[in-house]
Length: 601
Image 1: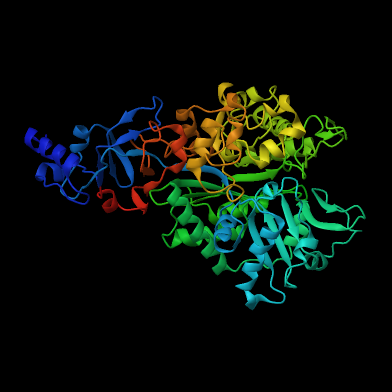
Image 2: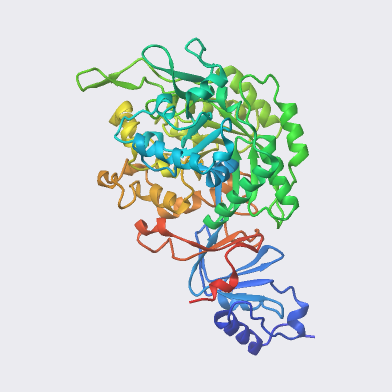
C-alpha cells in the first residue's frame, strides 16, 4: 500500500501548522499514524539555527525530545499526526537555548532569597540602611546569628573612591557577626564581631592567597581579599540541605526565565552537586547541569577525590531530561584587576599616582597563586584522567601562565580535552593567537565589556590607555581564530544575559546609565551580533562537550530551544537587552512559559 500522504492531507497539514491554535491536534489517516509522527511541530517562526551557515528556517519538528526536522512549514507538515501538538509561533524568533559556561548557582539562588544589595551604587548611609532594614525583619537571629549580604557592588560606592570599613558596620544596632560579599567574589567586608570570632588581629599574617587589609596603625579594616575571606567564611554555618534546595530551586527558576538550558557551576562543593542530583531524581532539574569542583595548592593529590565525586554523581551521556555532569575542574590562578584590591597577576606593574596627578609604574603586580611547574603537572594529570581544566585567570600574567599549562597538556598528547580560561579580562597581544592554536575556550563575562565603575574607574587608570585596549578582548580572540563563550559569573554579575549580549556587541553602558556618556569602550573588541549569539549557544556547548547534542537547531540534536518576544537579529541592537523569553524547552519539555500562552496575541 502506498503510504505517501496525499496532496490533500499535506495541504491540510500545512493549513493546520500555520493557522491552528496551540494544542489543537491534526486529524490524519492510518498512513500518518503508522509513520513516526512528531510530538510537537513549531511553525511560522523565524528560526535562527546557529548551524554552520547560520541558516534561517521556518519550522521545527520534535519527537522524543529531539529535533527530527528543520525547514519549511510545508516540510514540517509531513510530521504532523493525530497526536501532534502544533504550535504557531506567529513569526516569533526561535533559537537554541543559552549556555552559561561559568556561574555560581547556589550563591546566585541564595542571593535572591537573602540580604541582597542588588548591584546598586550606594553612599555609606544608604549601604548601612539596607542592612538595618534587613536586621529589623530578622530579629529572631539575635544576638549571634550570622548576617550575610550578597551582590555588593564595591567599586560603585559613592562618591567614587569611598571605602567602607568594620567601623561603619559597627554602628549598626546589632552585635551579630556580619559578612558582606562583593559582586566580584574576591572581597568581603566584616564587622568587628566577625573579626573577633575569626581571631583576626593586627598580628594575624596574611594567608598565602589573600590579604587582610589594614589601616595606618596596622589594625584590620574589616576588608578581606581573596583567600583571607575564608578566615571568616569558614565560621559561617553551612546551609542545611533544605536551604540548599530552596536556593537551587530559586536559581533554576531564574535561569530558565532567562532561557538558559545548560550551565556550569564553577567552584562546586559536593553539597552543591548533591543538591542538584536530588532535584534531578525528583524530575525538577530544568537545565543541563555541569559542575567543576575546585583544586587548590594545598591538596597533594586531588585525583582520588575528583574521581570519587564523578563516580557518585555524574550520570553519563546527555538525555532528553536534564542530568548531572561532573567533568570539569576549577583552578584559581589570581584575583581581580579592580582597585583597590588589584590581586590579578599582571605582566607590568599597576600604575600609581606620583602625587602630581601623573600615573607612573608602581611596584605591585599581583601574584599567580600556583608555581608554574606544579600547575603544569596538575593540568596534565587532570587531562589524562579525562577531566577538563577550567582556569580562573584575569590578569595578563595569569592568562599567560594558564595558556602555558594548557600547552603542556597538548604537548602531552591530550587533544580532546576542552580547556577553558575563565574571565581573561586582560590578555597580552602576544598571547591572543594561542587560544586558537591550543583550542582553548575563552569564557568571558560580557557584562564587563562596557564603561562602568569596575572598568573605566577602577581598571583603566591603573593600566593606562595602551594596556586597556586589551581589556575584555572578545573581539581579538575571535579574530585570531579563538573560540569565545559566555561565562556570566552570576551572581558576580546580574543575571541578565540579554543585556550581556547587547553589551558585548555595542561595548556601551545601557541607556540611562551615567556611564553612557563614555560611548563605546574599546570598540575594536566588539563582537558581531551573529558571533555573539554563537558564543552564548554553540560555543558554550562546545566548551562543555555538548555540541553534538545542543547549541544549534539541527536534526538529531536535543530540543533545547527558546522562543523570544522580539527578533534579536533584526531589532536595533540597543533593544536586545529588553528581550523576554516566552518559552524555554529542555528536551522538548516546556520548563518556562507555556504553549498556550504563545497562542495569545
